[in-house]
Image (cartoon, rainbow, N blue to C red; front, side, top):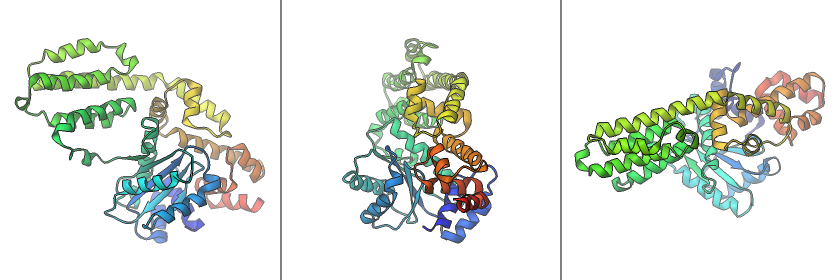
Length: 367
């Protein structure tokens, strides 16, 4: 991918205020033609992309029969873009992982996008990948993360109960209410007519959902799980069982909303910390240790409060500081060191994406 294409693509993926998505997507159509069908985000725990990005790219090309475009996002992440349809990209990601793991000792994680429908949906696909890659905080032993709700409904009926209760447990861990409601409704589809099942068994299944809600220690302090489960076991009809369960889910959702409001001060502290340490190699684990907050909950409250992930906020902060230093006439190597970039190419790419041709050309000319 030549530099102009890389610049346009990265600017479109992270397009924001002041950008013209329509003009960017039109420019990308001219450069690339047909839009990609799927994308894989490669995440490396150690910041080695500045040294090994070309190695990763060539090694992946060796193992994949499919053509792809490659974009280096930052020192931790790269993006692989594919135009082929009808391909199991989770299998592709697993194949890459097995091969790269023989060559590198770093922890590798992959997120696979849902099918990309058009150029207009590409930035949304990037945001989905950013959220999917956060699964490494909840399932660090897994290496490939994918979102495909439709496939979940094709499971054998006998395994639905344990499967969806487990999914609900994971949704609670990551504070994902939309997915929690989705998996809950998947579970209830099986029990639309309670007469097909033992009433005691149905109560047992939904009591497990309530029990999972109270795995959140702070939520336990607001309500008593034993009392709620006892209420459920006194129900005689299916709609009563669902009413008790859904009441508890709504209470949990309200608890999360209050938690976000209560965490506003914590988020302000994290933002202040970023403003003071943006020149360092920061990860979400660093923030978690510094502020005694679980990585998953940190990601939840930060995104809810600021509208962006911690990583994206850090990147924006670095670009703002780089612009300030540039206006003061600071040299490129010194700017690079000051804002936490180990490679000048990354800084130049980011400056081009954030500030456009004029600032980029000025920086290149002066350095």
